[in-house]
Length: 217
Image 1: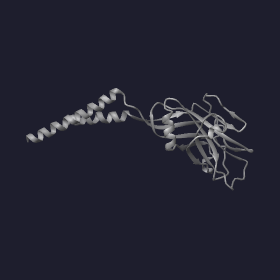
Image 2: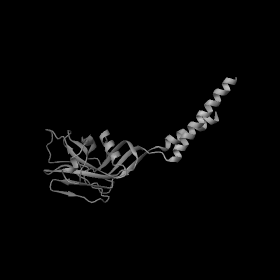
Image 3: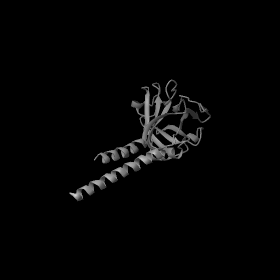
Image 4: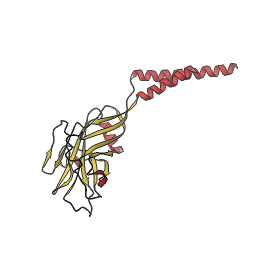
């Protein structure tokens, strides 16, 4: 019985060591419109801007360093200042796999996730979380050990849009602009494999001893 317990504990320890969750701050963030970009360096910049403002359309971006792990689920959480507001309840913020930091490049890739920007999500000064879809998970895993660039845009405006300003995630200075939350698994180290094999061996030996004892009885 003791052998079986030790083997089970060793196997559980192996499994526990192979998964974890983590919040990863964006390594950079910024915005672009059709005739120029702001915050295009790779420093930690807590400033982004997306939506419509005085006839101009803004796209935003967030760069992250992806750890060398296998990501299973993920989300991108973005700070939204209280003065940002969306008048149109049909508006949606979408994330893309950006091809570069320019106006068109930020929305040129696959859609990675989206969230509706109703009044409850704007004008209150809080973080907004976008759950990333399977396409995003695959893209992040391809980028494991390197960097990844998210592009964002506000769209879906309907007939109810009667304002020249519909913005989200603007002027986030003083807060981390965004962070990537991941749930991931890691490739077990040799010591972990040894622990797992030991666990299975002990369990097998214990079961064999138990069967031999029953036969004698």
